[in-house]
Length: 65
Image (tube, rainbow, N blue to C red; front, top):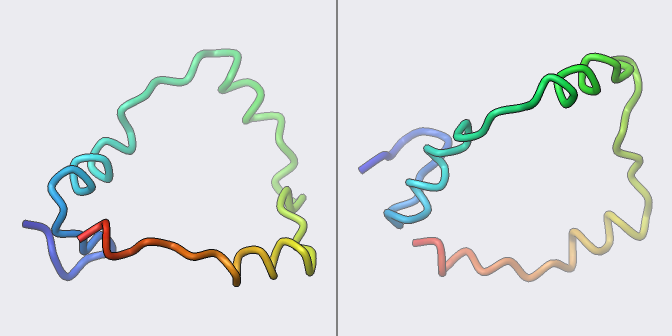
């Protein structure tokens, strides 16, 4: 089992999902689009509504054990 790191799940399916994070390939077009992103721009603009919705989220952490 993995433990002590960023991913401390003991759920085998969750561990497998975390390990498969790089199990994809980007197309040349996708790579070009990423390269064109403005590295100085913040693409996430927090708002009171978004922050309140995150704070009110009821995440089921127990199901990840």
